[in-house]
Image (tube, rainbow, N blue to C red; front, side, top):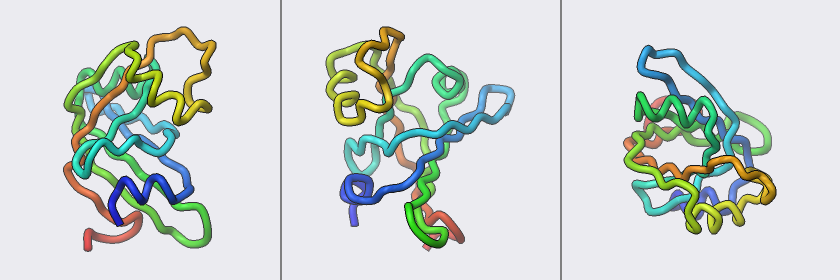
Length: 127
């Protein structure tokens, strides 16, 4: 199953891990990523710690735990490649997940693109 199909059809909980340039780690709950292609995903972010960390350290990991019994899901190892700020493209993506950024929220929003370096199952080694 492609990543696009996977994230369009599987329900679960996502967690994004980032670290600053000193290695101080942060974890944050994030919605399913927007799959641009099989090597690129994007997240709509606000000006918070995860976004700050990606400015000084482009490496991140995203863990997605599928809803249901057991420990099933994916781990994505990522590198930030670029971002866009307050564009109509962000609003288009935001409309797909309105619970993430409320329409009346006027804070800065960023569309952050990340290259997928590796995909592993939630538990165990890469197959």
